Length: 301
Image (cartoon, rainbow, N blue to C red; front, side, top):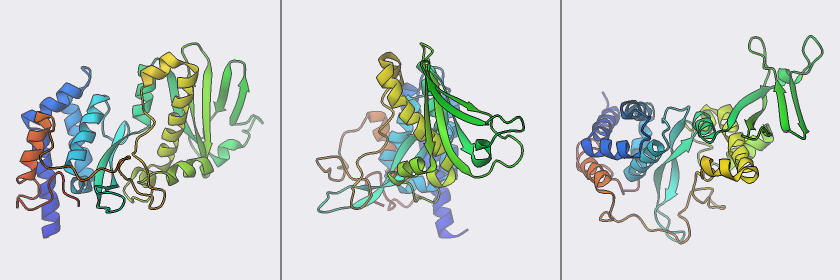
C-alpha cells in the first residue's frame, strides 16, 4: 500500500472514530429531530466520507459544522437528501488571500421535498427529454404547460421505456394548502446560468458533474420556494431560509470569499461549543494520519 493510500485510509479511520465519540454523538443527537435515528445518520455520514475522502483535506471545523447543520434539518448526507461538498475559501483577506478548502452542506432534491412536505405543501420535480416534447400515438402532447385562474399546470407523460432523447429541461411543481398550483420550468440555458454561479461547478466529483439533472431539479425547487413564500407567507415561514447556500462569490476570481468585512484565519484558541471543541482537539492531536504533523482544523490545505 502506497504512503498516499495509507494516509487516506488512516484519515478515514480516524474520522470514523471521531464521529462516534461520546462528545460528537451528543452534539449530533442534540441537533437531530426526534424522529431521525442517530445510528442511521452516523452511518450515512461515514459512507459519505468513505466515498469522498477529499472532504478530510478541507478545514475540519467546517466539516463538523456542515455535519451538525445537516443533522439539525433531519436530512441524510446520502446524495439524495443532501451532500457534503468542498469549495475554495479565502481564509485571509482580499489584499492578502490565503486559499484553502471548506466543506459546505447542500440540500438535494430529496431534502427539499421533505421540507416542502413538512410545510404542508405537495411538491415534486422531474426532468424532461426531447422525445417527450413530441405527440404520442394518439396525437396528444406528452408535455404541456399552461396557466389559468387556479394556477400553473403541467401535464407530463414521461417515456419510461424506449428512447427519451437528450435532456431539454426540468421543472418543479407545488400545490399550496389552498389548492393553488405553482410550476417552475427551467430549460438548459436556465440551468447552466445557475451552474455557472456555483463554486463547485468544475469539481469532477462535485454534484454538478455527477448529478446535473438532479441539480437542475434542485434549482427549480429553490425558485419555487421563493414564489411560495411570496404567495403564502405561512407556508414560506415553515420552509425556512433555504435559498442562500453559499457565501459571497468574488466576481473576479469566481471563488468564495469571506463576507464583508473580510475575516482572518480562525484563531486556534477561539471558543467553540465544548462538545465540538473536544472532537476537533482530539482530531488535531493525531487523527490526520497519526503523525501529529498533518493539517489541523484551522490549517489551510
